[in-house]
Amino acid sequence: MSRAFSVTWDYRCPFARNAHEHLLAGLAGGADWDVRFLVFSLEQAHVKEGEAPVWEQPERHPGLVANLAGVVVRDRFPDQFPAVHNALFAARHDRGLDLREPAVVASTIDSVGLDGAGVLAEVKDGWPVAVLRQEHSEAVERLGVFGVPTFISGDDAVFVRLMHRPAGDAALAISTIERLLDLFEGWPELNEFKHTKVLR
Picture 1: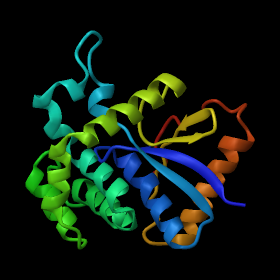
Picture 2 (picture 1 turned 60 degrees about the vertical axis):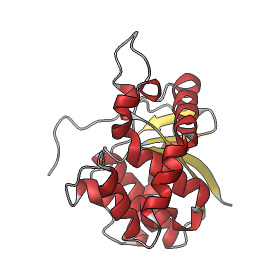
Picture 3 (picture 1 turned 135 degrees about the vertical axis):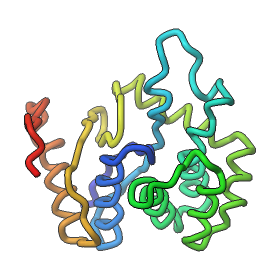
Picture 4 (picture 1 turned 180 degrees about the horizontal axis):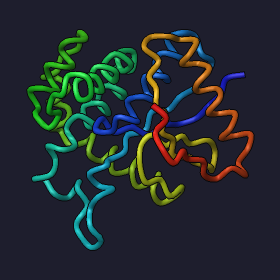
């Protein structure tokens, strides 16, 4: 039976990169998962109390452009979302590129065969900001989500930090996510488990 769950992303976070690489490699390798990819804004998560939200501050929108492009691809070009999703994470964390630059986002999207300028034109239309606001706000208000990657199943959510990447190994990716889901869904009594030192 297919396992249905959601996972938040923001391209700024290296731990989101790790988790989403596992998800994408597992799905490409035939994992029986029904994954909903939810956009989340770390920019908004760090807004000070009483300050206007980032979606009401146009001067902060450059920090959102990659996530908004991800929303466009997810919703308009779902078949190409996995490639674009991987490419945007790689641009930020493997290549050290600045995803606040629209030209960088566009060229990254171009590199996997989709029209980057067309995607950014959709971003400028404004609807992706409304999607970001809705998904981010619902996750925060309904489930107390505070970061990425957060895995969501039903009315429960768990923030996760995976320390390794799958490096294209679908079997490793599937076993990693399945182990995570088994723990998350099968043993909710474990609320926190964190090594005091990074073991590498």
